[in-house]
Image 1 (cartoon, rainbow, N blue to C red):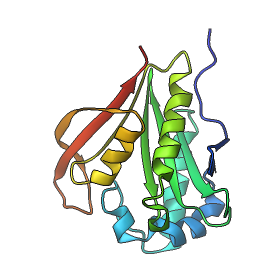
Image 2: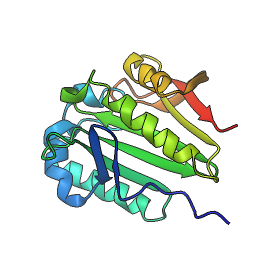
Image 3: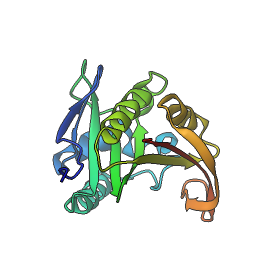
Length: 183
């Protein structure tokens, strides 16, 4: 029987280093992106007003990660390991891994999201228990849709009234669903 799929505690791509997020990261995460309204626009959370909010958010994510079904990874550029540039989260649902991610504005347009997502997809689909990877984004979030496409995912459809994007309004918005499957 194959060992259960998991994302290692630390993970590297050509230009980036990822590691499990920790409570000690709250200040740097807040300073880097968590309080930025532009960064939070298409996320499931509103911009954090205090470091305390960021600390509580990280604490909640870490409690969800305790069951081995969620892997929240903070991202650093190898050239500057002091300030995080974002976070990727891998969630497991049976034979499916789904991804969520956010990058600080200083990391936009540099191909970092595509680099990490492509690598994480390859890692997941190489495991015998994972047959499908997926991610979704708001239909207005063209940058994220491009990342998923460049990472080898295929647009499977539009999910109507699928997800509440609190920074866009109180009603559920439409999402694009992207996926890649192992043959």
